[in-house]
Length: 304
Image (tube, rainbow, N blue to C red):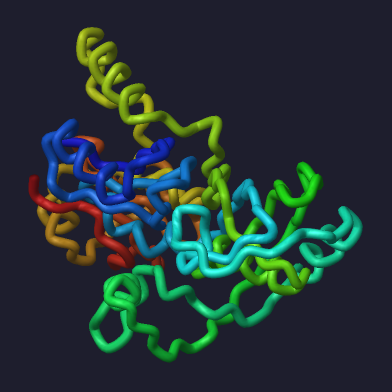
């Protein structure tokens, strides 16, 4: 049973759901979820939570993401990317300096209108499902933030740039907005997600690479795969407490327990959050220490 976070390098042509479905077959586990959808034509970092780590999905979804995007000026599509139906085409007369100025004007917090071709739900229905039926509904702009713009290539009509953004931001919509600001329109023609929170593209593995690593490490008799980040790693700076066998039942049930100083090695002097393990070494969850009392903050143990 795998319990932890896996950093996948999603390849073009696959949906994020396709990645999860293949991992379910590969791992032989159903409890798997990702922390941020990537469009089928996009590639790059997709952070996946497996087993007990699915409780981290919301935590990891809130972080910033970094992308390298290609913008094609002069074309407007219904999906805001190159795969969509062409709505308008225009000649491109803008200069590299004008392109740079337009892109950098989107630095900082702003309101962005969510695209119709998205998984956002309004009235219980996904916008993308409505869009495919030719319907357009009113949407509420959402506050997003863009930072750390870097222009990688600036040869109109094709532009490449890097940007870091907050949760909920759409790079497709950013490309469309930049094109409209320049007066010639534009759409996203390529997208690579290079970072999600602390996870960099260099740490990501394709599905085939994950399968190969599993085969190799299974043959070596390893009990934990090297590509899996354990749940407890996401709570750094907290002391580790391994309870005695007599307290196992309490921690497995998420009950409070008491430990006197000196009874277990490593008990901190001050009151703080700690990472608690059963006597077997199995990670249970995060507890709050108040004197000799320990009470549950977040439970990650569940019966297999």
